[in-house]
Length: 344
Ligand code: SF4
Image (cartoon, rainbow, N blue to C red):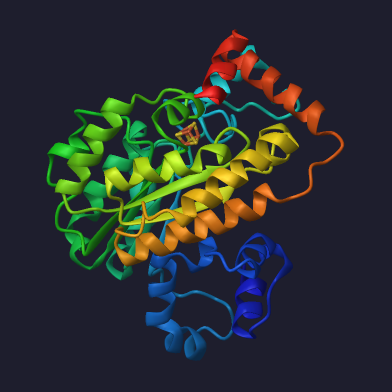
């Protein structure tokens, strides 16, 4: 970490951060340039340059934490390492037979241990980002937020959620009120039937109900789509759907692994027809009424999707497609679910 920090201070681009450089080369927003990270680094540029030349951090202003992989979903492109439910199910599915399946992983043994280790830094914190699993499925997250209450007026809270947990104290208590700013990143991988298929465990009605609750609490809603073989052909329907839900911003990434879930598993014909549909959609005016930032994000998503749909089709495409069918068959125990979803 010290070497990385020094490289950044010298203006170098460390190879370990290649994923961000690749994103930025394509004119896209990488994780390091995401709104929370950028605001924080801009505010502290001078201090960082003058006081942290040796790469050693003496105080913590931003904290990114994954207390555990506890999750109630088994999204198709997720892994046993990131979701405890995946870890459980994969004992039967055997889709990651060569990876260590460690089940439920917790960064700290208890809430007390977590709070004890982090509390010395609380008074200096300005930004905290909480990842899962599904954070609300992990009781330690609630305890962490309770411990942070005295500091929240100057802290920007950002958390990721699958938006599935209802009747949770998180929504009904004052825990979410009074933060300097609150942003919620929500994964959404297609229009409702596709989203429900990919994000296994999702119930659209609950999802929309919880979204409303969060919007009433004043959260900035960031939607995130993981572009993959199962959703890239539905981008026009996806955009129409999210426009109704009124997020604040939209971000996206690409699924590259396992390869059969990536967009290279699509046939030439599917890609060509999706390309034509998206091109036509782009020329229509459906999203021009969106607020400026969201409109820009949608435009970037369309441009990137069009680029992806123009990528050459590899010789192994048919094999990858069969592997994708098999992947879903192992999860569903029924091939027709995937075939029906892809035809919607
Ligand atoms: S909600 Fe997130 S952590 Fe849970 S299975 Fe889906 S992608 Fe993985």
